[in-house]
Length: 328
Image (cartoon, rainbow, N blue to C red):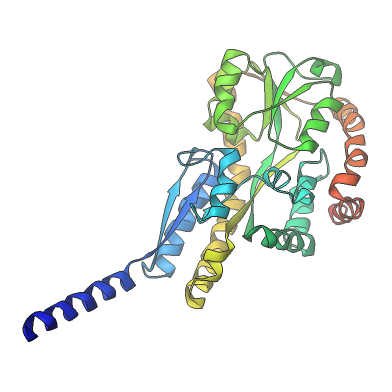
């Protein structure tokens, strides 16, 4: 009996030890393809995080809405079904943190330098802090780039948008943007856009070129207008309870891995968009048009009132602060 009891105790101890050595799993879900800037950066974070923690952390990356679609993923994170996401900044408005919709304001960022003044400064830190009451910790801002417009008809002047059904993310700002151009905004999950364009449920959409190309939207869109009218970026976020519960050394290692992955992501974002636009052109199915100075001025004039219209929603002082930083 004594031997059996000792064996049982030893077996239990070994099981506990094996459990203690099991890696901490981070499920990282996102909705875009692996070969986009966000997709590549998620894979880079996985490599860096696993190396920095000597295998004590295992990062499982799920691209292309494999686990959750746009509307589902934030709830999944809050419930702890996944630990990490990198949703587009527009997603936080419906969650109740409307200030993030400032990033959707048309023509608010004249350059990447202006953008980084905001995301890497006090404004960016303050915005990430606002996620904490929602059970979310913000780790970093990731880049995608400035958006182009696409449709099955040329979109050169504001008048060309009249009556066009344009897909948008769920954002009051993007809704107002399309209405200011005379279009009819249609909210659709990212994973549904290709089919909606193919079947004519919507006429066109807006995207950075890398998203458009990797989702093959150019195959079902005859015209692209390089307008750089708006910005698409992401916030890398984690479940706050999960993050706070990590050992301090693990959290520090993951923070460093995220910083390095963010530097990598920003370096490839513009390159990938340039390459995607070139690939769309070479595919020969889509005519690419760049707005003239005069045409862009017309777009700006039509879209500038959106900032004023959104002051009550986003906060007038925040919009002013962003414009001030962007002007530096």
